[in-house]
Amino acid sequence: MNSYLEIRRFRDDQIIWVTRNHFQLNQLHDEIIKRVITASVNQIIERYGPIPCSFSFFMMGSAGRFEQSVWSDQDHGIIYQQQGTEINEYFLALGKEISQGLQLTGYVYCDGGVMASNPLWCKSVSEWRQQLATWLLDSNWELIRQLLIFIDGRSLYGDASFLENLKTEVYQTIYKENLLKKLLSNTLHLKKGMGILGQILTETHGPHSGSLNIKEKALFPYVNAIRLLAIKGNIFETSTLSRLEKLPDFELPSTKRELYKQQFLKLLYFRLSLAKPDNYENSHFLPITSLSKKQKDEVKEILKNGAALYRYVRNIVSKEDS
Image (spheres, rainbow, N blue to C red):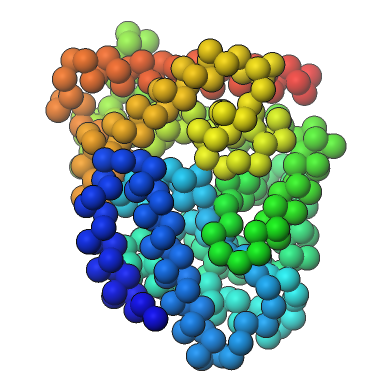
């Protein structure tokens, strides 16, 4: 059995070979996380006895979308088959063990507590069903945000059908209750990446002054817009690129899909090759002064197309519900 220390050494040895390849990097993250889960499950079995029922451990956020950078924080949850006080305690202990294991192997804790160590994200199938129904039918901004986080969930260990079935129910409710507009309003407040004179809007103070926040200003317009189109089109894929590929022509013409795919790929490459990936925080910022004129123009193009895509989706969703 791998200890967390051994898994951390494995991570440090392997990651240097994949820091410029987005897909290989994310495959490595999956491998590391699976090793941590296996080690954690063994620890918990040793401590508390056999696993009481089937479960699914799923990733959300950038890991759920297969869009992690070199460093990543934790976003994950657990769905288990049966409920009961002892079963709940067992899986919460497992969630805490996995969170700790991931932290020891290089994944910082999630600021917002979106982790299986939090009872909100570690529940039985029936409790999840109840919670998701509340999130769906309550217009509270925070609950809708949590719902969107859940929709990016991707099962990495255990019975994937638990997550798929819950997502099917979520999508059905969204259509039945016409909730797309509500989901849209949760992601409307995007931070602009470009000013009216066509200049890149960088951070004006703090340690990242002069840098572009890639996560909020470049990635999010693509991620949020394509997620909405995927929900509208009943597409269960979680990565932005897979969602784009699955969209039918009547939702987004193939020429546009190809353009946005190329722009998003270029953005992922820029994040890996031009940001300073020495820690989780820094990997989100692109120091603009270090870019060539050609690179700056390409970044502007990515920002411009991301904003255009977002406007397009906003118009479609607004018309749909009106």
